[in-house]
Length: 306
Image 1 (cartoon, rainbow, N blue to C red):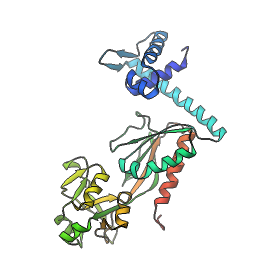
Image 2: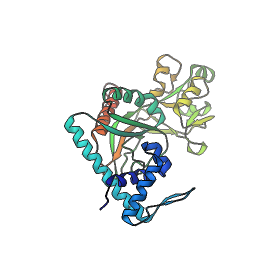
Image 3: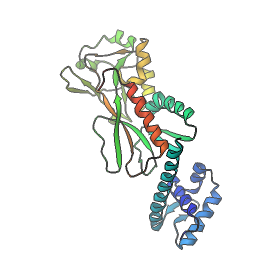
Image 4: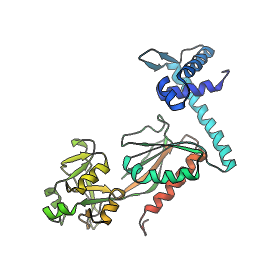
């Protein structure tokens, strides 16, 4: 028997943080105590769980196996807390969310701020990045992602939550200088701004014709960025046409700083999904945040949308 089960939980936090110093920053527990408790656990078990040195942190093979059991125990402890929270009727506990910067800056920040006022016992961490995240490995509770095809995984649930609308837009000064495009073939003569991580990963502009067929235009952008806010600012200054999420350009369209381009060929909508681990019990706090997201994304849909 392990005399103190908290040692297993602390060991799991150290492994997930990737070291004692990182675990100290994440948990607030002094590094000296973390090292002492993991050492005590190793002594009880009679095995080395972590190889330590001044410049290296490595979990041993048996440490990896022990970690999996410790992680399961932590999940069960969280499920116990969730059961009690449900009985009390008040969401409580941590929630870690992953989303793209544009979603976080334009939507989630405000929504979650309102949520925090109503539920002060819920502690939310919002990780904004366009990179791929490992929900299980990084202990992400909820992730918001947009995709044109259904997302499938044995370990991850992908629930449709709304529709992401895009708009092809340009500044009035740009359109005055180059003329209004009348069909997609005209787009090649316009300077463009592209979303992507580099010249080889620029996202094509997906447009839909009157018969519902999708047309892909591959821009040759003068400026490439994976940040939609930066692309919007460049577009406002007339640097090029760009395809933006509606949330990033709604205000500029309303006040005329940007104009829709080729309205007869609307941009292809993408499905918004909320992703969460299928094997993990969902706490009351995570369920409450999920319910908020479902409500808020429904409110974004235009009248008459399916």
